[in-house]
Length: 253
Image (tube, rainbow, N blue to C red; front, side, top):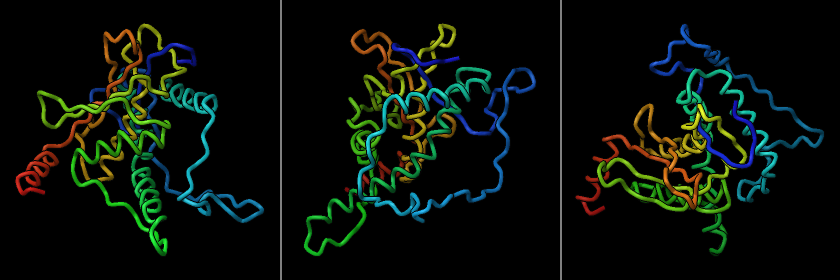
């Protein structure tokens, strides 16, 4: 079971759906129960103010790294105990991060719109335009999204030289892997799959669908002695997204 440590290698996850190729009858996997009907559980403090009363334009306070590491390790332990393979742990972590990406897109666009209108006369609020091209979306993830999550941009953004629907976002030292120690028998596990799920959620929310089952995945960059924890987030867009992009280029858009 992965546990906090100083040097690392880690991975990413899934929801309550049985992944293809996994036979729960022949493994120790514990499938997640089907989701229950939503029941609001919001509690009102004495001030009668909730999280929904907070100002969306104001940047959130920095979270303690030790608190995040403890929470994230608990998430990994939970999914590890219910998974039958490394790939399933990563699928579960990916699915855990996916809903966050769906929400971060609108939050960041709203804040960018507020900042852009702050200096204008009258100070009317607004919302920044959504990315309409693949490169715009990837630069949005590489910059604003990464700064929101980790306080800095990603280290590199590249396109595959062999497949035109594949792009790579590179992080030399993922924060989520800082205090994760991976057993030798699970050396391929990369817990940054959680971040891959967030990236996939942003792509889907922006209308840039990714390939089902392997839309965004986290991989170790082998052979980099300077950055042993270097991780590559491989983004695979659907063919329809690539065709739309080529159509826009042909039209001069």
